[in-house]
Image (tube, rainbow, N blue to C red):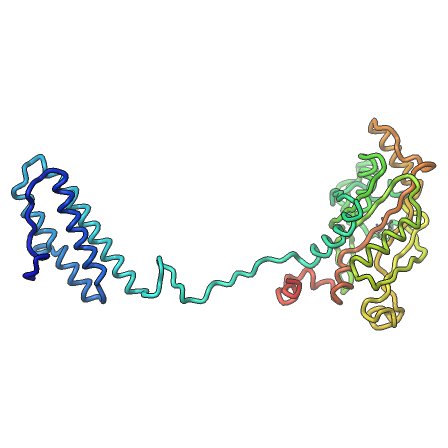
Length: 374
Ligand code: DAH
């Protein structure tokens, strides 16, 4: 305690420069001492030495300097003592924090294992949907979207499903309540397929038209290993002059090879859809057994994947009737305009692509399933 640092410094003058000089050297002293502190005892001693109520240096120096201070210098002195006190207290807090976590930097313990945050991934269904859409974007198609709550007109009538036609039975429909007072065409329902967007797009735009329509669809189906009441489709439509069935075959053959690998073969089987004539079901050679026959393809060597066909002239006629009703020029004269359409289930394609045998896995939110697509 006989150290020079312990003696009460003399204050030669009360002008600002001299005050600043003296307080700067006190601050420096505090800092040097605080940096050398190790352990709780040393901190306690430092606390007493500087802040002790009766014998603390701050108290002694302030008493000594205030005693001889002219009244107009008291304020300047007081402010500086307060500042010095705060610096001493802050130095103590720093020393305590440093000793509580000696390996921390700015309060973060860099030795703890980090928090692993799994980056989100695209859901396998959305991923598959985007992959399908991308194939057609590369062929010059653009994306069109439509509403999930649709009218009977767009979902059925304009697509050549007349009222009470048995083809409606293949798409068990969820209807919106309290629509009985409306004309049948205006009654609302949950769309059972993405095909109504074909109609909406043709009414809005004249050919040439090339669109893909990804989206959710709804059917009153009981859920089982291959059915879900809500599922996803990608629709396609290409309309221009001189579009032929060969264009349809070439386009879908290319799309299937792009999705499943260049080794797959496609074949077209006669089928029926009210809005296409002729209609076809498209099959690809089984990707699990290369067409040799296995359980997945029910030993046929082929897997059925989608429906397609040439747009039925009745569809063009109903589109033009709507265009005229809305004040647009007719643009779909079936004598000049032809086109093809196709529609595929996203779940079905994702199941084949990834060998998934239960559609419910896509909706269960089970991380063990989903993580496999990361
Ligand atoms: N809309 C049909 C369905 O959901 C699928 C379909 C078949 C779409 C043939 C088409 C098509 O555009 O040409 O069952």
